[in-house]
Image (cartoon, helix red, strand yellow):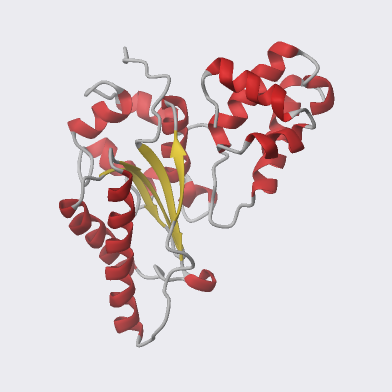
Length: 258
């Protein structure tokens, strides 16, 4: 399907994560997941936020959000989590914090990364072995896309895909990739980078120390890692064992500097 290409999205899109304090199963029952969805809807009506994708798991939630105002993101998440926190404490007859942190977020900077993040979110229940297919999970936006329901309408389709028409076949293809590397509530930077480096070594059939000796391959690797993780240049230099200046030059030439 023809699509308007967008190389850079800047910081209008954000992958947001919230988790129960002490990894508590704060969404363990259907009624809790349904209530969190309700609070998302109510907060969306008051803030300039588009909900691109979501998956509500038992102890954490992934959201893919769009806004042109960074302050709206903060206010939106504050409203949702405070409302849910009060509800959960009342129902469970408990007091204290409900969420581990206010929320975690990472910017989405290009369309490839955006689509991969959406697929990662929808595949969360599959990854957790709760269901065998994305469409079998009730509390994600996967079916919303297929049925044009929930938070998904023509505006969202055009915002994400650059075209208001989306074929089911294309949508399913986007979700068939088996490996996704994005920040998660329990992932550390070291875990993410180790996984990516292993994948690159398999792809190029060579150890990372030798891969990086090829300038063209090094450029591709640096750009891909930056797009997928938004890791700092200093940390990337440490993992790849090359100079920070070399990484900065590659990203500056590509206009993806931190």
